Length: 423
View: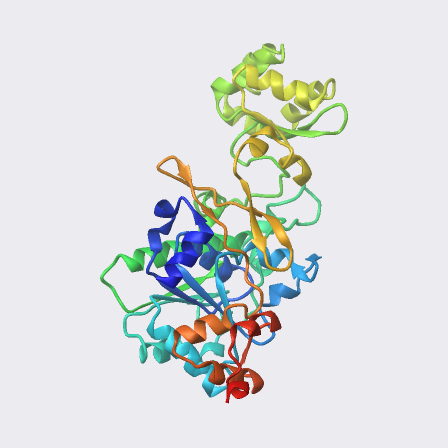
């Protein structure tokens, strides 16, 4: 009941949110793909216990920092309980085994061989929980020639072919500005975790390689090659199959998007621009024609767009039913009236930073959006709380901390009764 009260304090629209209440997730993951997945599960009401090494998740060291706290770490770890356990110590492993007994899902993304070395591999965990859903996120398929290859997202972006299709023609490859395939892999982990929860197939080990996920989620880009033998090349903001469907500049150098994705929209665009002559031009009559004559058409359109402002063109095109939008800087995103009038951003209270803005979940359920108000945890913030739930006494917790098996911040030590002083 005590845990239930804590959750009610953290969440609004509680009945909607707590879809996964009663589900415990043992989070042995770090960096991004695993933590992103477990944050979503926490948003859905699961009790996520994030097990960290004494050094903490490496993203805690990634800049920028706000009074010592990493913005990167805070973006993917809200709603969890952090417990610090030294898995190299037998007593630390015992704690994780006790947690595994009470968990439904375990998610890890250790390098190959590390989970075995630390004693938290699938076969070992089965000894303590024969019903476990064990999700293993890896860079490449286990047993493959790249099994031991380091798989940061930029490595996957490079090897998947994505970076060969980003950036401008005849210019260097460009990395997508965020860890796209970490996020995609995390989402796949959530999908399969939820499917496993509601299936009768338990225990189950689910392995999700980031590289395979990358190729899969690029969809039509690899399929174009497989079916035609032709590789999609760097085209900046343009599309290999549709023209015009890209960014253009206005007279001030500001960028905006035009998405005339079919012949009807192309005709409406020509009418809006006062260039109905282009509709009947045999070079541009159909989308296939426009793809074949891409460079000439883009040159003509850019000469038109050079004559006025971004706001003018976006307004004109939208009024004529042609999809268009400004290319925002991140600062402009949060000045947009849609963002300002909605609940894309919410606020939560952080024990060190006070009230901070956080990105809200994007999903509405029965017309309502739920809000997870639980802050990203401090390193080891919930170590005492979780160990007490497992039956450890305060004296045992004190001793484990002194011997380096566990860690909790000094602020949390106020929760403990000093058994030695009482004795």
